[in-house]
Image (cartoon, rainbow, N blue to C red; front, side, top):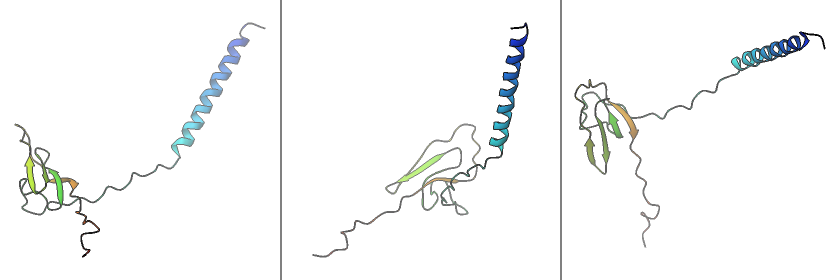
Length: 108
C-alpha cells in the first residue's frame, strides 16, 4: 500500500460522514413541529378583586408575591416577600366542580 493512501481513504470517509450529517440536519429542519396542547381556560380576576377575596371559581391564585388557596370554603394565603412587587392576579388552578352522587335523588 503506497504511503498516504490510508489518509486519503480516511479523509473520504470523514467527508462522506459530514455530508450525511448535513443532509439529515437539513431534512430535520423541514420537518413539521407538533404544536403543544391548548391550556385549559382558567377564571380571570374581576375588576376590584382582592387577594383575600380571591377569584371566583379559582382554587389557587397568585399575584406573583402571595399565593392563596381555597379549600372547603376556607381561604389561606402565604406571606408577602420583603421586596416583592405585586402584579395582576392570576388563577393557577380552577375549582373542581362538585359532583352529586348518582343515588342521591332516588326515593325509597
